[in-house]
Image (cartoon, rainbow, N blue to C red; front, side, top):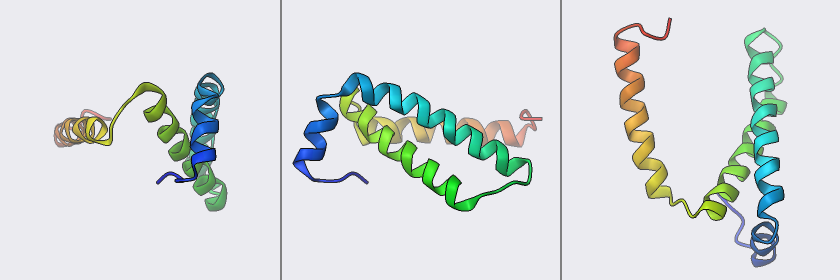
Length: 93
């Protein structure tokens, strides 16, 4: 998912505070793009771009806070099970 360019990795590591702020902003922009799509104003290119931005930020956050993919996938499995249980019980509506 991430670039392997050492200069890129070093630049992001040296600017962890800025990368954290950018990550929060990018998550907000993704929320806006999803909201527009839900209202029938889907801009697929914009939504795709916002998803890409968030994926980049996720990689930054992993590096900054020393979070492994294994850590993330453990939580993904737990969360997916919880969502399936809620869907089965119609708790989302």
